[in-house]
Amino acid sequence: MKPSVHVPLRTTRTGVAAAAALLTGIALAGCQAKEPETPASSGENSPVAITVNASDTTCELSGTESLTGPSTFVITNNGTKVTEFYVYGAGDRVMGEVENISPGLERKLVVQLTEPGTYQTACKPGMTGDGLRGDFTVTGDTVHIDTEGKFADAAGNYKRYVNSQTEALIPAVDVFVAAIKNGDVAAAKAQFPIARTYYERIEPVAESFPDDLDPRIDLREADLEPGQKWTGFHALEKQLWVTGLQPDPNALADQLVADVKELNDRVTAPDFTIDSTHIAGGAQGLLDEISSSKISGEEDIFSRTDLWDFFANLQGSQTAVASVRPILDERKSDLAKLVDQRFAESEALLEKYRRGDGFVSYDTVTEPQRQELSRSIDALSKEVSQVQGVIAGQ
Image: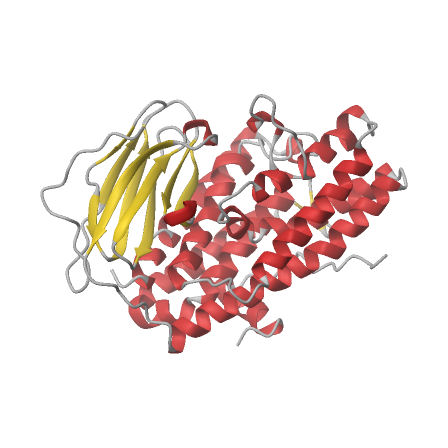
């Protein structure tokens, strides 16, 4: 059995610069819609943002046409359920997505639609099923994304970071699984948040695959659909902290090992590519994860190790921004500096809850303290949400 590859969680408070150092260290040099009067513009013109009114039963877009290039969607959840918004290409390929949009919140998605054709948009109230779908038509000439220079560096750097995390995830899960199979509950509990760290840093990448890979690894009990088999980290978490080990822990453990290996195989495949707009979108998605489920305590409801996930999401977002930082510095250096400041503020606040190499149990964090954390992440998210558009050339 390989030992756990434990990347220290503690980082210096130097904002995105710290994340850039990390990159260097791992060899990183039924949808209703209104027809628009005109398609959203691209190229040298400023794109027109398409507003999305999401509710529990509808997904209303202000426009269903756009020109090739970056398209901006501003999604407002006017329903009572947490929702998601997706843009799909052929074969349900995820072109872009925003998850964990709580009732009353607004989120922005910038997605590169470089080829003309018919795409689909989808709102997913309750974050389940195929969603409320509608066609979205893109016209114009094929747009060639800049893949040279800083853009090539950004994509290559971030892909290598993702690879490093999935490669570390496998031995960390091996140690977690070995403890479960040995019946060593204490050791399994200690390894649980460590193993999850590698996954939480890059979760938007796993979510980007058009199948059930992410749910197999990370589905929460509250999100189970009728008849759905529950596997992954949280199914084992419940046995470790609540019910005791059941007759099926070895099967669940083996399935988790197989699923994280599948994730690693996918992200290390030669045909797996990342574009710079998706990197920035992933950075935003990780912060949305914190604000939607980590702050409320919905993620690790049995172990109360939410702050480990919280910090991993923050690290992953910071590193994603670092990979596109040269482009951001060149195009909007004042935003880059503000993003640095907000990351540093959130890191400093989270440090208050550190104990040794980990964090306090989340049930010891009071509601006023949670609100303070929430305000800090919201301030950070406000700035990071602008990065997508800057990188896309808007």
